[in-house]
Structures are given as C-alpha cells and as structure tokens.
Length: 430
Image (cartoon, rainbow, N blue to C red):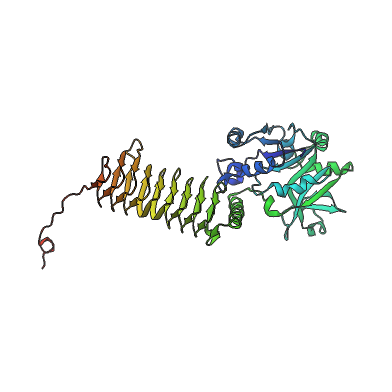
C-alpha cells in the first residue's frame, strides 16, 4: 500500500507521574508504543516516529526491537503541539496516516477503513452516550464540516454524540499545503493538527468521517487509563488462546504476557501468571502458579509453584511451593517445598520435600547435575558445584558436599542422642 505513517510519541506524559516515558509503560509485557508500531508496520514500509521528551531512551528501545523505522525530533521550543510534531517529517507516499503513540489497543485491522477511503482527510470518530467534556464533530451530508469545542457548542451542537478519535489519514498534498500556514494563536500557543480540518474545508476539500470502535482507539494518559488498557488487552489475549484450544478456569483471574505462546492441549487454572517469552506445550498449570520466561512441555506445575527464567521442564511434575530457576528438568517429580536453581536433573528422579540446591556462595553461582533414577530424601541440601550420578539414593537430611558415584547411598547425619527421663527432669514433674 502506498501509505506513510507518522506516530506521535513526543509528549511528556505528565499525568502518568513517572520518570519512565509514557509510551514505554508496559501493557501485557511490552511497551505500549510497540503495539502501535506493529500496527503501523503491518500497513506501511515508511513508518516515522516523532520524538521529543526522553527521545534517546525511546529511540534506543525501539531500535532494539524493530527495523526500518525513521525518527524525527520535534522542534518543541518553536513548534509545540500535534501540528508542530508533523511538520518537516519527510514522508515518501501520497497518503499519510497520523497515529498517537499512546494508543496501544489500535490494530492494523481497525485502521484499514481509514486508509482505504479516498478523501483529502479521513478522520476517525466514535459516538459516546455522554460526550460531556469532548469537542463535537459536526457532520453534514456525510462529511465533516467542523470540530467544535464543548465550551463553544450551541445547545443543538451539545446534543451531538460524535467525538474525535484522534487518528487521521491525510493526502500528503494537504499537509504540504497547510502545515506551513498553521498558527499558534490560541490559549496554549500550540500548533494543532485539528486546525487542518477547517483549513481544508475552507478551500472546498473533502473530509470524510469513519466510525471506529472506542476500545481500539483509547488513549492512555494516566495510570488509571493504563490499567483499563491492560484489562482490554488481557481479554483479547485470553480470548485468542481459548479459541485456539486452551482451557482456562476463571480466565478473569489469569495473566498472560503478550509474548507467551501456548501449544497443544493446555490447561490454566485460576490465578496463573505467565510472563515474558514463555512457551507452554500440552501442559497443566495449576492454581496461583507463576511461569517466567521458561519452556514447559508435557508437564504439570503447581498449585502455588514458581518457575523462574531460563528453566525448561519436560515430562515433569512440579508441586506446590516448589521454585525452579535456570534449570532443566526431564522426567522429574518434585512434589513440594523445594528450591531447584542452576540444576540439570534427568528422568526418573524424585526430589523430596525440603530439598535445596545450594547454588550461590555469596559471590558466584554454581551448577548441580543430577542423573537418572535418583531418589533424594526430604530435607537434603546439595551444595554446588556437585554431580550426582545415576541410580543414587540420598538419605533424608543429608548435606551433599561432593560428587556421588553411580549406584551409591549418600548419607550424612549426626548420630541421634537420647537422654532417658530428660523431659521430667526439665519440667520438674513426672
């Protein structure tokens, strides 16, 4: 498609009350600006990002995740406002779509009707049951004749329910002709993109409205807006995976990162959290478990378990209150109350309750390697670096400080001492 896209991401976002640039605030695991860029690149090979506030930080983030973006630094001191942001952006194509970087719910499909229409300006609008506080879009005979701020509305205009959704598709010729003539003669002393509507209308140009869904064009200006956008995004993500065959119990209680992938016959119980680039294949994640940046295949996890980043579980059962970090477990059972960090554990091994891999000495991390068919008794500590070969039994309460050879029993306990009658002596009664 012969279309250029300009994404406005220069604002300071003061209502977010944050040192993080507004457009980098995450929604479902990714900065909100990423969703807008994805939608733009699905439509155009000429995508421009207009930056000002913390421009280096935003540009660095985008360049780490996207290719073929073009950046323009707004001359905010001399040309503030949305109109000033679009000035001097060197677009290549005859149609120019202008998006806002704080609209993370917008999609290429939602934008398609705007870019497929032919007019000097195509303008997105939606109807509100109560448009109080919004400027009204006045439409006559299928064309926009003006945008009237609420304070300037006549009683009849206040009855209008149609408001501006904030996304426009311009003919490049309209921008070339009218942007140099924009004025900042207003209360805010800013250059407004919306002034192009009246300028184009005054010379007989055609301005066509396109009704869009409010949810897809929601802007994020505060932490409250961010939370609402997160809720909508989560509903989209979970609906997509449920339609793909994933079972979810009480889906409103589940969180799934936008980067996560679920394959096969998966079950997610209530309260599950899936973060980062996690991949879950034909597995059952039980209530209130957390999976972070890991691969879970043909396994069950939880309830109340935590799988931390860089872990891989295959044909494994992880029970309640078990934490796994940066470990590979194949065909393993760890039923409850264990910490397995920086470990490789092979098939047929059973990890007893209270087992800990002691992987950190205060300065560095070390690996624990456990072979096949190892039985680890309860309350055992495996002090890394250590290797436990196949077919080993580790007695309950053992602290393993050196390698254990194949077929051996490892046991390290202080002998039990029993003092007859001590109870009665201590409490002074019999």
